[in-house]
Length: 343
Image 1 (cartoon, rainbow, N blue to C red):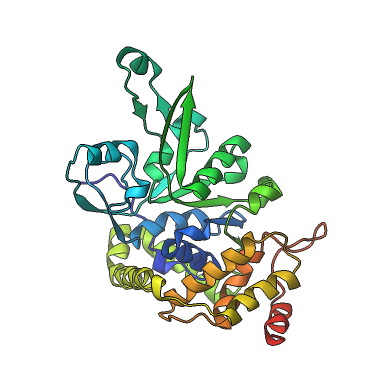
Image 2 (image 1 turned 30 degrees about the vertical axis):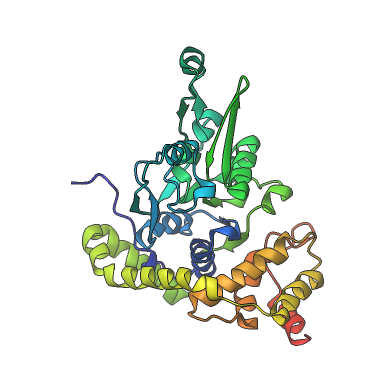
């Protein structure tokens, strides 16, 4: 018996293709930098993120490691794994599923980063660390609902850890660090406030979503949800084939990633798009190239094309474009097409 709630199937979510694509691209290539999902309430933001757990593949970690260090990545091992290696201990690999770890909105900094037991250090001379949310998130997806309501210093902590892949804790001159490499996913309702612009830019991708306005699609949303609520277990069971197919597609894409090539012409397209839309800095250029490569892998190709840039440009640019007050969010696709055609 399990007390885990039955989640609505990821593959049964109607529409919201940009949101689903943004999440899948980050699973395929976590270095893209996470995704911020903005939208009105009731648009399946949280449902979609939580249901990711149904399609996430497994990963190889060091057996017995409290931080689930990625097996074979010795340069990223935690102090405990490095200590075991120094003692010539044979480390074993074990497969664990990638998970969605949720950060409570009320979490304190100690709860997020973990705590050092200073009393233990003073008594024994040995460091004793109590892992926090960042330790659990290592190698997983860290989900923050209503991220715009989280204290700014906690958002900074999450973004810094996500970017560097390390959580560093120091108390009274005693320090401890461990791997904290994760995909940060945030959801928010813009009506409840926004994130600072400099924090927005730190999310690799961003999606603005709205409820369905098409009658047939909206009706399909209602019918599927009612069917699920009537028999959650049965509905999920009937979706297992689709979920397994998508999981296998993700695994193939991850395997394909090292073979993906993006020639100079593709890089020129990426840079030209950023210059055309007046995007500052180079973070967006790098992110668009990574997203385009992950999109090619998702589609089962080894060569990046203009179609991959078309499919991912809005995800990268949506939160980085300069707008006038009250101007609608989003990317002018006709302008993007003109830019690509001119190259």
